[in-house]
Image 1 (tube, rainbow, N blue to C red):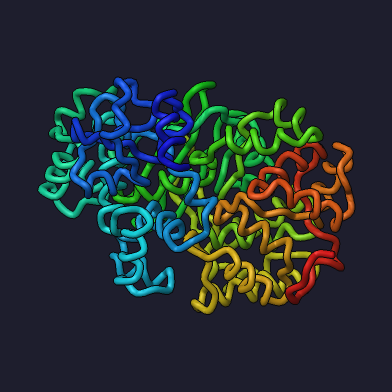
Image 2 (cartoon, rainbow, N blue to C red):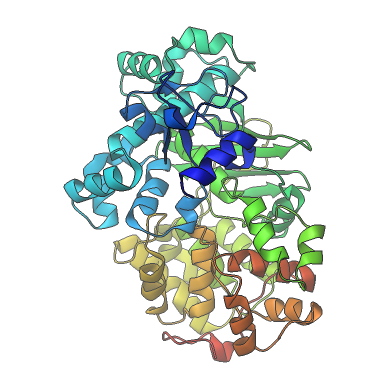
Amino acid sequence: MDFTERYRVIQAKDSRFDGQFITAVRSTGIYCRPSCPARTPKPENVTFYATSAAAHEAGYRACKRCLPEAVPGTPAWNLRNDLASRAMRLIGDGVVEREGVPGLAGRLGYSSRHLTRVLHDELGAGPLALSRAHRAQTARTLLTSTDLPVADIAFAAGFASIRQFNDTIAEVFELTPGQIRSRGSRRSSAPGSLSLSLPFRAPFDAAGVFGWLAPRAVSGVEIAAADSYARTLQLPGGPARFEVRFDGSALRLDAELTHLGDLPVLTSRVRRLFDLDADPVAVDTALSADPALAPRVAAVPGIRLPGAVDAEEMLFRAIVGQQITVAAARTQLNRLAAACSTDLEPSGARRELTRLFPTAAQIAATGRDVLVGPRAKIDTVMRVAEALAAGELSLGLGDDPAGQHARLTAIAGIGDWTAGYVGMRVLGNPDVFLPGDVAVRSGARALGLPADPRPLTVYAAGLSPWRSYLCLHLWRAAGLPPTTLPPAQQAPIPQEIP
């Protein structure tokens, strides 16, 4: 959007743009979310920034009234696939705190100097400033929603020291941690556990996300119901358990962490799992412009693209699920998890969560003795597990979509469907289309759309960049879980779907 369009947004105080850009006001020295209830400033006093970090770098402080940090994230980081957007996904996952700027740059395949220059040019702030803004947002959330000691909050948010924490809070919010805490509504938390709210843009198809996760839940690793989802997860600081619950208006995250410093990583991954940074109005508006889709969009507003909390796990799930039903894939994954995974001691309210999803190394060691079915598929699983365990194959949030697709389809036994599905779930890529998927074609037929892959692909091209959401609507229209390509099309070498 240009200046005029953004200024109209702040005049209308449109909350769906919260998190998509920042409004800085020269006359007051503060920056706000677009929907800030304060009087709209004069155009000549306004500067728009892509991130709160950029506004802070320019000398502005956060508005105490609208709390511009307490908003959903920017949907552009998934919609865009350039270096800046890939970096932002990794910064949100805590890479800078764990590996520093050199580690972030190395994951992206560039030098630290080049990455810093690109982020300054694109977003107005370098990786350290962007990471600090992310830590400040986490700290504010914990101060206002938990009763954790301030020292624990500092380290949970990723700060290296109490002094660094205090200085950053004072610079960003012009408040002390105690003053921020006095403005919130806190909940009691047991040691190592916490509860906080997850902001999102309405509408939100919660039933659709929980309904997607439930039939795929792996015993001992996950528990899913109509309005809740819980699981275990290996995080950098150790194993964690978390539960997400929807009460009809708010989404809450309850977590038990081995290390409180893993909170930003967990929050980022849960947000990706539930697609909480999406702009559902933009998606629904684009798709409902097609007369054949309009009734479906009206019936299911705010549909979300379920993501993944672990990239390697998602790849194994996709391979195991090739050419079989969701129920059959779940049976296989249950066997794999029971035989190969790390067991956990029962803890907390969800004592049924007793194991982690197996790692690539664990699958490489014992997976062949556990998996059943076609030998070619088992060979693919083992080939991938060994490559991941040896570091010969990597998969992550910062991958370039085309590069990731090429690496995966170069592996014997992985075709376009699997690579596309992994890109959809791991990268949150909103523009993946799977015309060879049986349920996608069934859903298209049910809506009176072309059911053959080639004309269906041509039709879907007009709905770019939202074709992943189109797939979700077609799967829903078919009344079936997504299934994989027929064996003839799940080729061991890269090929275009005919």
